[in-house]
Length: 113
Image (cartoon, rainbow, N blue to C red):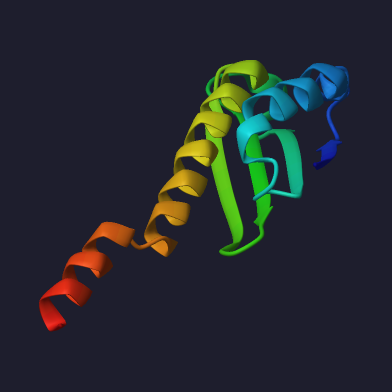
């Protein structure tokens, strides 16, 4: 899995290695479906403070295209963790939508005979 990290803020740039490791850990069971993840950390308000740390994840998936998740929090680690949780749920949900249960088709075929 390729992880691309972007941050223009100096404090956000220091989180490059922990962020990449956290993304690889959270997406380890979905790595066959998600070959590329782009992580963007930004500070919306600048030095004014508040809930202004934004984490945007862009996941390129094999079957469903792109999934983009954006989360705001007080700090970047929380924003990253919330984004990763939402991203894994979104990818697994889209995977379930693509798959049809084999049992339903088997029952339907048996009733047609």
